[in-house]
Amino acid sequence: MLISSLFHAGDATLMIIMFNIGTAAMFLGLGGLFGHRMFEWIAPRPDIRA
Image (cartoon, rainbow, N blue to C red; front, side, top):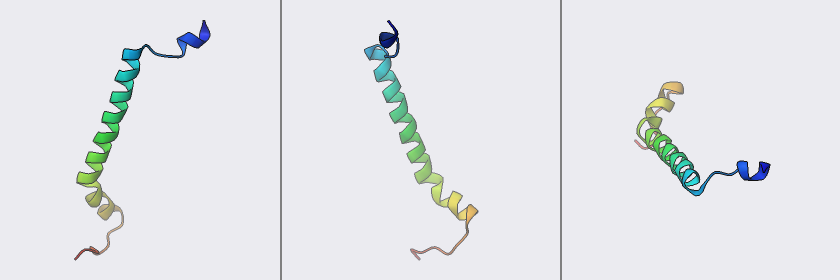
């Protein structure tokens, strides 16, 4: 049946969801570590928090 082939088994679905959450957490962490430096390189401006 075509409909049953569109869905993953429970284990595969959980693995895909955890992979997506882990990837998003990695991007958030890298953005937190390097975001200020990256945006400062693109558009240099004085620090507001000084």
